Image 1 (cartoon, rainbow, N blue to C red):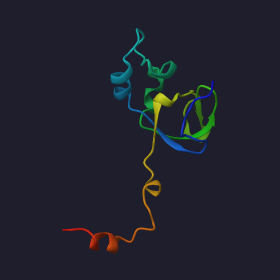
Image 2 (image 1 turned 60 degrees about the vertical axis):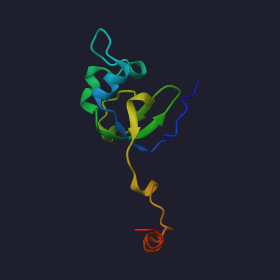
Image 3 (image 1 turned 90 degrees about the vertical axis):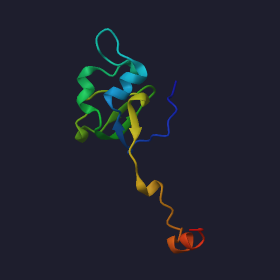
Length: 104
């Protein structure tokens, strides 16, 4: 079974906040979140860290060694995209024309 994702190798992603994962998935009897096979307390220091995806396999994501992710495997539930302004800016838009057409 392959994971369906719009993530690809080379993407920069952020490890989700512990509290957000705890709120969404709860904690198990060991105090670890129930997200994606288990986001354990030993991974908590990675929350909020930006990492670069180096491998996507059937069930998990791996990150570049230079990101110091500790060799942990991650599921899609544990990450989110970083905000990349280049993906949201349309260079073809002329700001002057845009504002001239607005009723202000």
